[in-house]
Amino acid sequence: MDKKLAEALAEHLYGAEKTERAVPKLTIEHPKLSVEDAYAIQEQLILLKLERDELRIVGPKMGLTSQAKMKQMNVSEPIYGYIFDDMVVPRGAISLADYIHPKVEAEIAFVLGEDIEGPGVTGAQVLASTAYVLPALEIIDSRYENFQFTLPDVIADNASSSGVVFGSTLYRPEDFDLELVGVTLRINGELKELGAGAAVVGHPAHSVAMLANMLARKGLKLKAGQTILTGGVTGAVKLHPGDSVTAAFDGMGSVGFTVRA
Ligand code: OOG
Ligand code: MG
Image (cartoon, rainbow, N blue to C red; front, side, top):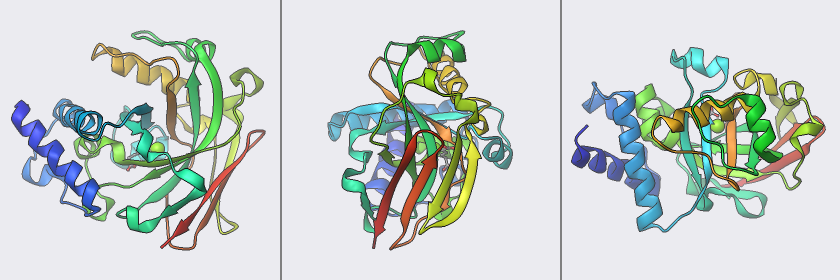
């Protein structure tokens, strides 16, 4: 894709995020947008955040890692995007006014102790390079009208990345069978979603391995110190004012936040 067009489309999505106003999905005007084009747009969007806003990357995130979401989108490979430092929610509360139409999903996050460079990375290698794992809640907020998009649209939109709340305790990965960690997501005490680590491409470490292998195609690697979101264990739930959100992770405590108007 022409670099000028990628820059213009990135600027368009950047503006939608800044002004908290949904825009029509890109594929309406650009029906031939490919996955490769979409990552070129995402790259320009990331550059805007790094250079214009002087933000820092917390780590990449995986999306569409659950079979349910992959089926829904009719895709066979997950996608990735980036979490920035300004997306980390302070003091356990968000204001709906800062978002367009946010949803929340429970995820398992990995803090890397060493760089991981593909291709050919395995889940076992990821676990050996992981310093800690911790529970997280991701807030996704598609910049597209009605939260509807095709695969290239959502890739260009930094995989709907918008916010994250991390649990306050770090755990050693060898203390868990992450495949079997059960997760519940409650809003105001009501059970909304549940799942287990295996919902994330079989095992959350496999998600990180896939990410490393996808980045390798671009000559990129995962870096020591990055915190990586592995993808939703549960489905995403729409947020409303007054919501008190809590996700409990078997053996890993819980993480939560509240929603103001
Ligand atoms: C795309 C982002 C998906 C996940 O964990 O699957 C994602 C979306 O569904 O808006 O973050
Ligand atoms: Mg997610």
